[in-house]
Image 1: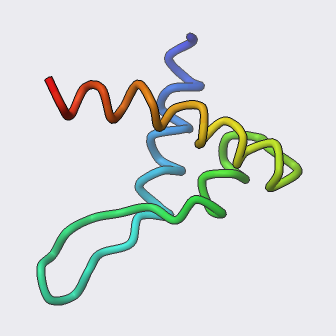
Image 2: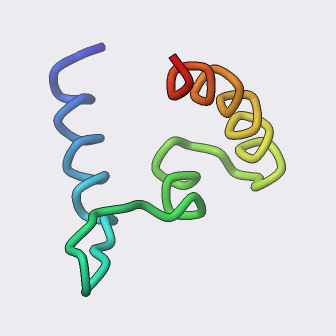
Length: 62
């Protein structure tokens, strides 16, 4: 990936970051990420999220 694209995405991710007031934990809303990652329809992005859950759970349980 080109450096410019990476820098733009990083900037966009930082711009939409949310912070939980009490704990200071940083998080992102899926609907905001959907736009940055170029998904026009929530249904398409939701499929990607659901597909990623299984490998993520496997990493946590190791």
